[in-house]
Image (cartoon, rainbow, N blue to C red; front, side, top):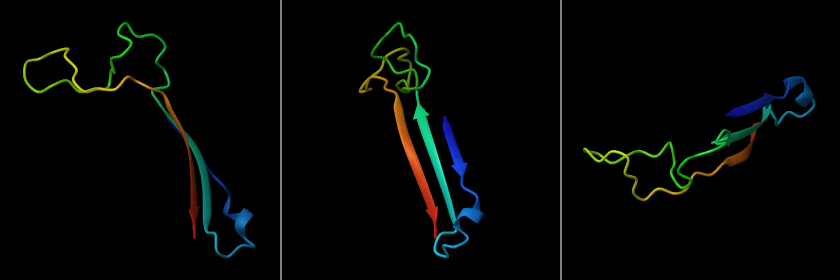
Length: 73
């Protein structure tokens, strides 16, 4: 999920160098409340072939949060 706010250009009318500014936040895997297999990632791809339900080399699922700042000159 990503939420972004674009600041109005009129805020930068006195500053000729800045053409635009946006600030956003993002998150991934926000709705993992309960899993029957705590170390399995539901987004992990399974192997090619006929091996179903077998995960190799996957990390535990984590929630990720971040902030974006975009300045246009």
